[in-house]
Length: 350
Ligand code: SAM
Image (cartoon, rainbow, N blue to C red):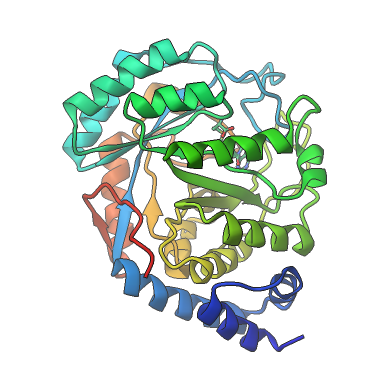
């Protein structure tokens, strides 16, 4: 097996490592290697995207969920969770406010809430696109039928975020109830790509049962699936879930993985997630310095933000949208990058 530094050189040159090589890179993580990866990832990102950081306005449309993922604070068996649902008009108001603030992408995310049928979503999508033809709309509403994905795409949705959560079927079973299947999640991702969406996959870092072996599989999956986006963030326990006593994932490991992902796919859209900022006040800045190039401030109405609690102590639950945007723009500028007003599509591969 090559030395870790040689692995990094090979990764930057070929954008690919074997499973065993990814695992070795993860097992040998050190401050020196992190710094090396960070420097190379930053160089690669600047060559593709310059110092631009894209911004997406996140609208959390519903905290109702029919699923029971063991890690998630809005799982259906959490009787303590406060449930809310925005109306299509509420969502439009968020988009209008977002547009004024410079957002050119709206991400509609929520639990798997059957109330948001195609009959309700399609007219909403058409209306958003009619009012803001220059915007992109991303959906993150979980697993649906192929027909539904097609209808939503035809109504104007451009992108779909569906974290695969883990590339290992056994690990998937440890994180989800038996009625959810890894095979179906993967099938959804393939269908979304076939339909023509810009697809985002992703996984939590430090989820219970995850070791370097599983993480190596995550990296290999991203390498072969070639998504437009990949959302990774530390797992953070939620007090009313079966994983309440599990330790949170690591910010440093998340940053290490962000750098590796940037070298795997230089044009990948990589968010510095809210979970990073929740665990460490400078977590998002660290994520950007490690290679991330997207931030997703919250555009949801302030009165519902505390109800979309996927994990404990989530940040930005009290701020107005404008405060969120202003605060992030200043943070991004403080480390030498620029929050841009742009749809933020993936750059074509070099
Ligand atoms: N229902 C949609 C879905 O399943 O894709 C979108 C909403 S779901 C709550 C969004 C993401 O939140 C999940 O894909 C998961 O990775 C992340 N998440 C859930 N619980 C979390 C936790 N305790 N810590 C960190 N991330 C979490």
